[in-house]
View 1 (cartoon, rainbow, N blue to C red):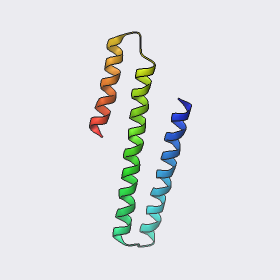
View 2: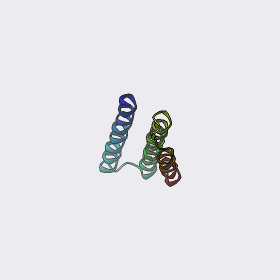
View 3: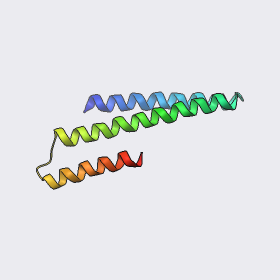
Length: 86
């Protein structure tokens, strides 16, 4: 679990850096198309990070099942709802 957390944190730090880059681009009055390109890349990075978080959740549910099968099913449904919202 620690490895998964580290991966997500690293991804978020990269996204943070990308956002700071866009802020700088705006301050420097760079071209709109370049800013939009970077924002699109950030959105893609966020979506990818969401996928990793959800995948980790599903993996956790499968590999560490609860004693109550109904509770496990609810946890899987919760993870699937997160995917659909994405």
